[in-house]
Length: 142
Image (cartoon, rainbow, N blue to C red; front, side):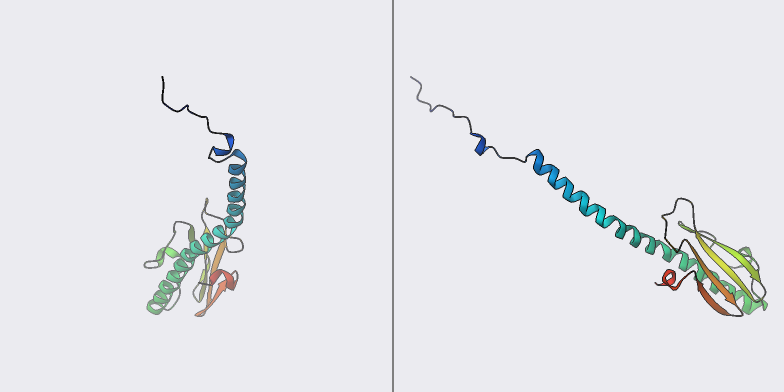
């Protein structure tokens, strides 16, 4: 005779695991949290990348002041400046206007760079040694 106890099947109450409804609820919660965090992340990323433009324009300003000290006037193009940055990974620097007593330098977003609302084109306007920063003070906050 067989002395082993008979195997019993576990009842539905004893089965452990995650149901499809629980997985769906968890996925929905993760999706809502991600959609709330994404705009903040993108804004922080744009602010961090904007520092590249600010640094480039600051370097242009320093190079222009060095050129002016040596030559008595500002350079009329970027190629005449020593160590002037022309392009970064996200921004490209150009002169919008230049004359002997001043210039307007622009750092504009390169193609494919993340949009930066209101600060896509950052400008540095210098006239007779006085600098103005544009398009707004918010773009230059470091």
